[in-house]
Length: 374
Image (cartoon, rainbow, N blue to C red; front, side):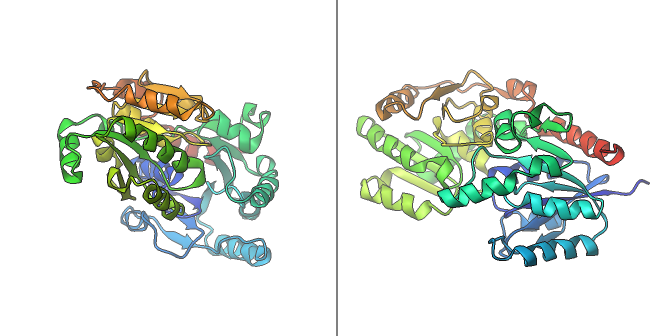
């Protein structure tokens, strides 16, 4: 029997974010008799996926968050980890701000290194973004393989020339398609439990962070609910900006019309409850929530900042963030009268977003990189 290949995934945390969800979807579906995922997270706090990872046989290591001031101790933590764990054949890095540091150390120990871009913009203040962008420059030359969820995400991190190279690959943020297909029973159950049985439900799924543009969405909904008093806004997710958004909701006097679920494990059920999905992100590597929403047969209105790889079905429209908010309102209201939900599952699968096929593809990729000399 061949030895199991252990792959070390590097993340910021293991909560329900887009990149983390993509990794967990892959982990659940990969052949764990051949491959095992372990994780390094940059926090000591317990995260949403910790227990499930343990149940699946994975290990989790915590490492200090990089501050700039702890450069030498941060490097030492990585050096100690690889010195004590020679079993790792592959490092798969999803946190890119410090990737040049940990990739260089991993290569000293003969580890095959992968850098994976999930975004099209750095987070933080302008100075923080500048520092991160400078730190990320060496990644394209240090990592053995460059992966991205879209060409837009790949170009942003690695540059346009790098994404034409033989070591570059698009990895679709695939999902369990059947789990998201429209289910009338689930729809009715969720709507009943939320007390929105006969409401027009405008929905969004995403972490409460700057790129998701919740403030813009709340402003749109405020105008919309004046025109349609039967409307509610369903926000699925959690995050650092939630308190600010809650204050905005209260200030506008629409607290009774907005439902905040927090982080949930059954996003698929909440998508069933919606009538239209609105995704006004300022930046996205792909926008896995948009793929999930299309799979659920929802009409989707996406901003012009979403990569074209997310426009998979004819259930989706694009709107500019520069467009008047009234145009957004009118587009959303267009779907308030008995929109017939479509089964988009075949379109989603053909576009490469079926996790079962994606897992087989990643198995082939991981095997290939362990047998191919860079």
